[in-house]
Length: 338
Image 1 (cartoon, rainbow, N blue to C red):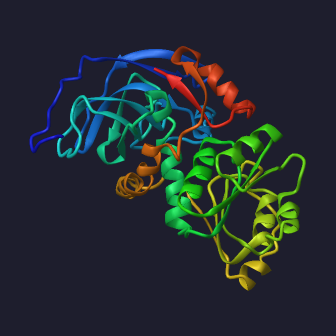
Image 2 (cartoon, one colour; image 1 turned 90 degrees about the horizontal axis):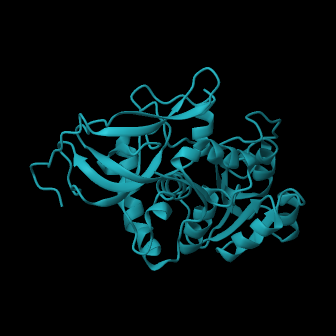
């Protein structure tokens, strides 16, 4: 582990390959510059793999600009080996294998990450699987376990069950003692999600999830809902939610606007909230990371929670990887091999 005096590497001449966005037509290309130098509380990671997220596609289109202090390069999560550490870094040293939530910059062969957002590679997982963890782990932990304060024995509904967040979230909720329901877009995906721990997976293309859950005796019984869909799902979530339920929106794939009857919100004392991970500060993310290591890593180490990787693309094929994500055909995470 790192001592009181951090080890430093002069990376000012270390070459870096990265994915650049052409501002005129949003095409992607592989460019080269020099690697960034880790600052206070940061590490430099020689990247082995990077996870794709929908935010990357939106950033490419100019619809999700990075914060002013973030790297302009896409990529929010990576796995690899620490090759340099900045000042005031405790607990990590050069040579440690990690997966990490970055502040952008993950689509590159070297990336900076805050030390507090690094996690060890769980036993039994390779670099590509580990790259699928950080964004989904922190998103699920914050929204279901911190914000919604899920308790064992409660009933949880996760929309978008076949996504990276959904597949990991179903396993985490199941492992932590709650009953989990989900929605997905094909029968095959629904069967796979039930094999991961979902009590019932509903094909939203063929069935109305509100009607199905009502027929199953679950109207007014769902304690926690994680929704990345929005649109017409907003009213249905409120309708099936239990008294004192907590509904958290993390995206609005079907739209930000909907006509909603809020009367049940008052009658059932429902808490309706939303969040994005990227907008939260480093200390908040460091707290999430520490809690995940304490509560979820034991399940990762014994294999009861495991990332689902759909496909791995080479860095040069990043445009194809984006097209595949946009198609919605994937199940779990899409990974770039760096």
